[in-house]
Image 1 (tube, rainbow, N blue to C red):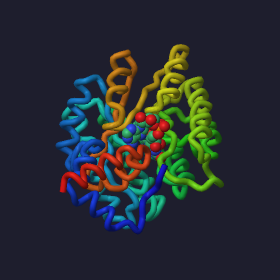
Image 2 (image 1 turned 135 degrees about the vertical axis):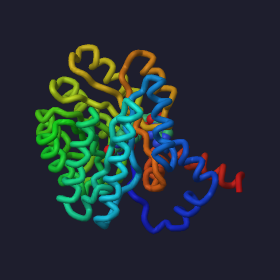
Image 3 (image 1 turned 45 degrees about the vertical axis):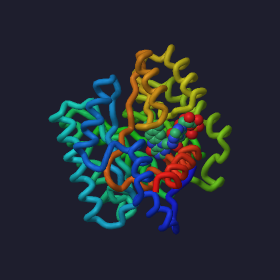
Image 4 (image 1 turned 90 degrees about the horizontal axis):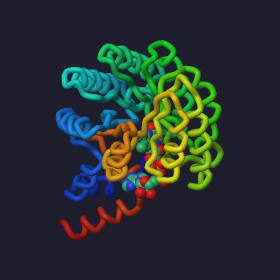
Length: 298
Ligand SMILES: Cc1cc2nc3c(=O)[nH]c(=O)nc-3n(C[C@H](O)[C@H](O)[C@H](O)COP(=O)(O)OP(=O)(O)OC[C@H]3O[C@@H](n4cnc5c(N)ncnc54)[C@H](O)[C@@H]3O)c2cc1C
């Protein structure tokens, strides 16, 4: 797990400014534009997948940029409606202004939830690093109580997550359970892979045993997927798997072929560098693939 990489300007330029870097990003990102994302979403829908459209961007520190992101998401919701896509949107609180002012992000989320409800879809709020967890959970709880068509990502690695689950499950909506993609201090988070997998399994059991809330099982981990399939056999309410575009597509196809609902998290936009660094950190082999391409492909 890793968080935003700072002080690495030359590395960033090497990745964003070279063909191998752009090719690597293309594995995980639909493209720079909404048109490109819509084209990929259409194909995914035709293949039996639902989609979560994520406009890339985070750590916005001015109001204008945050409001511009809301406008682009509204455009995205219009396209979901006109193209009749089986899709919702995923948003990052700091993209919508959480680092500027909590009210700005809360207003932005409310505008998106209202429009999403008009077009018959939902809004999932991504979870960022621990500086924002408390604000994000509170903002989600208020928005979900008010609008009823939201969901929130919770990170199994965070020590506070069992308490957050207890608070949020009664609110309905959907909870996307993921392991956590940010490097966190041991004061607030579990740090070994084993501890995080055990916590994930416990939290998954709570979610799958609850009614009213829809569990979104966001992992590519075989053991946890096996557990989810086992738990699904006795679950009466809905649930879905969620996986990242470009990660284990073979597994994604297999689950859909077996009849499980699966939503692909589909990022698009030009601000892909921080997203890509998280995907590289999750699997060092991705980085070696890039370095080899860079050395051979200049
Ligand atoms: C739909 C979705 C939404 C997410 N939203 C958030 C969020 O809001 N906040 C947050 O902190 N995190 C989020 N994550 C990321 C998550 O927290 C993990 O960092 C990431 O999913 C890797 O964990 P894993 O459960 O797949 O298990 P891992 O043990 O990391 O991976 C299991 C297997 O999956 C494959 N794999 C995993 N990652 C990659 C990769 N990058 N490239 C290639 N293969 C890979 C490998 O084969 C690996 O062995 C999300 C993940 C998903 C699937």
